[in-house]
Image (cartoon, rainbow, N blue to C red; front, side, top):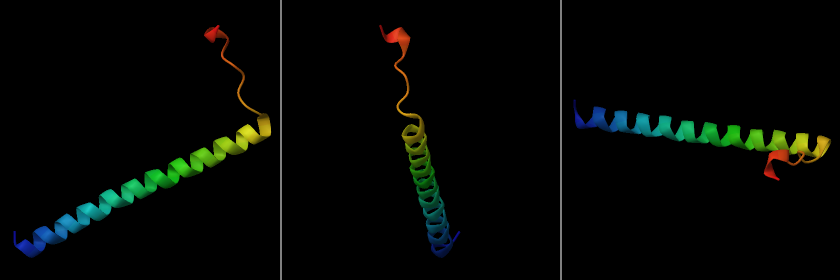
Length: 52
């Protein structure tokens, strides 16, 4: 492989990794937002009785 091809492959893999990190970050943001909406509507979860 030429240096040019290796550089292109490296950039492609770095871009793919960055996209995955971005996608997981956005998914976590939406999940937290959804949980906050549920908590606002229903109130906080009940305490776990096994903690006593």
